[in-house]
Length: 462
Image (cartoon, rainbow, N blue to C red):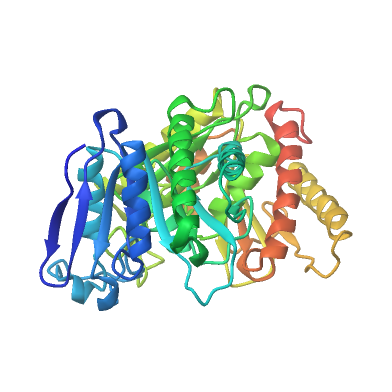
């Protein structure tokens, strides 16, 4: 491997970087807080040395209060002429471009390293993930335990556990890097927050070796697909990403989508969990928000975009058409055949009811959906009656405020034999982890039931 090089951003800071070995092309280790957390830079270099991955370390930006691993999230346009990072409040644009150049093309796997504040009492390595299926995440966690225990049989060091989301809850805010930052621009990636305990002494050398070995195994897992495990395919687009998890063989013809997986913040996680629980295919789009698209939101499930200030009016554009075509193609690939049932999952915050707009659903079928929802909801809430009992309204038997008319008229909802557009309230369901988890189980049971009924065409009124 070559020597490290430096790239300065004016007089406010610089990046240290090194390209990967030829056989590790696309693999990059990042340390976005190299000046404030020098031990993270040392870990990044060590892992790079041991694995052959490239690395990029940021120096000096943290003291200027500039974000590195994610942009500043915004809902309005930033003037195109603002190129000064001090005015942008971020060097994410430069960090992102350098990561790609260092990788030598698309970033196949990114490993971020940072440290928890010394005042934060934790004895865990906490991991945020991007582009990984649940089985891949479970394997990564199991691999860490196996590697750690092997090293600790030969070295006297504390046993540090790993918490990896979404399997486990982590204590730091990972939404920014997952939805807008480095974990969105890599096909697959992890960002590790290490406890301060690992920053010095003999324990540092032990865990540098553990994490280097774990990274090597993770790269092999990503490269070979993990054998027969379910696998998420990631397609990187200019303004975002589309993730496809295909169904089990017997579940063909049904797809659950989260076209606004970033804009509707909790829908990506919810749909991933539903797909994992049910075995149904999922397609999740992330990015495409005003942060990535210059103040506009690409609608994804239809060939239009809109701004925060003119939310009732939608503009047709070439970039919106390209994103929609990519999303549509992903949905039909995930279906693995004719699209019998498509379910769109969205989030809103104005009310406390689940609203379902429909295409191809009769009144009798709508009554079946409503009754099925009530039955699985009430059965689930027996486990925790403190969680709010949210009602469901559905076309064509109930008035629905959010009718999803644009997506019906020229979008994805008009392309399946039957389509259901779920608007899930943030208040009462999604904003609190406890209710979100419980209602994810409710929707999993409901969607599995609807898949059995509507895929075969033997549902009520079918």
